[in-house]
Image 1: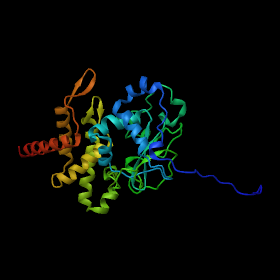
Image 2 (image 1 turned 90 degrees about the vertical axis):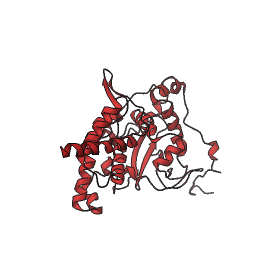
Image 3 (image 1 turned 180 degrees about the vertical axis):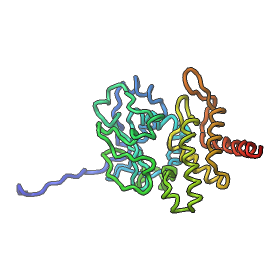
Image 4 (image 1 turned 120 degrees about the vertical axis):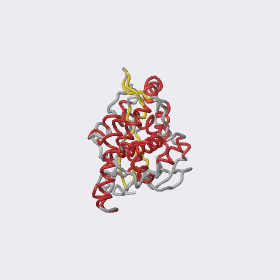
Length: 303
């Protein structure tokens, strides 16, 4: 072999899935992390890490319904007790790619090895910052990521991902099933997109209903103490209304329904807004509130 011979390397054999290892966990994970994240979020983070297919793309495809089933959690628990703490402390970020919402899973908080042995510090607040520009900034090694706003999730250009484990592509890990992406990640807050699939009058109504949800549900609909619903729930509420109340859509009814939701499920105390009910399915509960709001709206209109 001459000195000018090109040299490459390859692994002698791909390791079996059972041989792969989780991120090294130090005592601080038990002393501090699990107390701040909660048991369900901590376990979900480790499971997220294993869900990444160890191919070149390191991604796999799953709808939220299948993901929740895989985790053994309800959607309510997933949205209220798993996603917020993991996002708040920098264990995950979100990106859109190839029409999929990708959950970027970090090996360490904020993807920083230096933080592997330190107590967790909250770097953002899902309840107040998810819909703000801060939501669009990942914490990968202190660099800003290319996270996209929910209003950009349809028809945006693909961007390369940083090295990480991801959920949301076309490679399903062993033991999973290949399914279509979940449409609740697509934003309806775009009148141009709406005009492409319905008349101008319908598009205007749907846009006003969606805006009413964003304005009022984010203020009146809570999932946990002092934790209002986020964009994912709002999109699911919108989809539910369009599917189940196609001829009874009205922004005033939306506002009334969110107020009924708050009056029945929440209370204001010295500690802030607390839950009177344990809601495992906030979207389903909102459906009942919307039905009653229609009745009240009709009664008021007839008087």
